Length: 155
Length: 155
DNA sequence: AATAATTAGTTTGACTATCGAAATAATCCA
DNA sequence: TGGATTATTTCGATAGTCAAACTAATTATT
Image 1: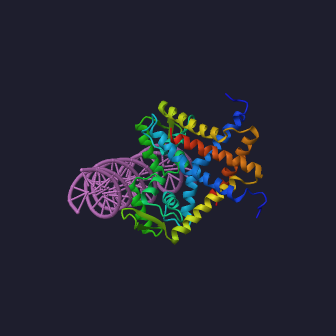
Image 2: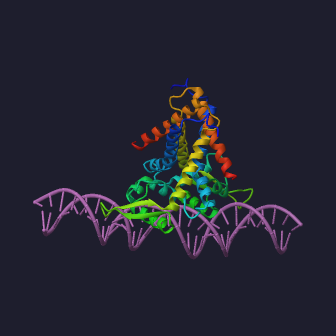
């Protein structure tokens, strides 16, 4: 159905292949880049935890756990590690002393910004050599993907 | 530099955010989809091993290990598991009896095709509601990313 | 041909990440 | 107050990973 608006079959296949290539490789490239950086003592998963905590939001441990898809218990040990290594801080909330609010240390903020930079570079390179109208198209495509994935989540 | 051809700052930020969103979520969505499928006994990493083996190529164990970035020893145990579960087969090569050639069983081929289908859906949705000229732009963008990542690999 | 070096894969032992269940602690509410 | 609820932690078990040592097969060297 809807053949008319479709790209030629061969072109679709190569697009698909490159897309798979990107998804399969970003992670371990990021992981490898991290290993060679000044922050070789954390893994990409740790990095995502740091990213989830983010700069100014003061999220709770379980909120962060939900974002990175870890159980609370696994989150506890992940936090322990990152506290030991000096990337994050635990602060008991004053409003509700059951909850642990998480914050980045100076070191944590440095690595957070580096990670943001990595993704910014990625986005910039996606748009490499493009006219403004073309950029809008790319933005639409990525938005399509976000919407599709959001739909997949709710079956 | 080169401010003229750039998309407005706010637009870039939201594109970047959505891109991060995609990268952070595809994996675990894929993982979750797998868990709810008929193939809940394998992980996404197993799936990538199966994908690396692929339909007709008869790759060796160490070739597959390199593709999925596992050490040979880790590959051995990964293969053991997938053989036990009936997804793949070990065949000692006749030309060189040191090498183990890997192949998919019937069950392995079924799950392989399902995984291909997932990625095909992704690519189709990326191109959702687009004119042929727009599709070309998207293809260029993805190609940009592949090239950039390839460059990052060789520092 | 005999021996050395190399290569492919496996086994083993240690370490880490993860989960689920039970424990702890603080809060809420009837 | 006392019972239910919530947030986090602790504990025990399991699974994935790596590095080093090992086996077997092949190739190179003399």
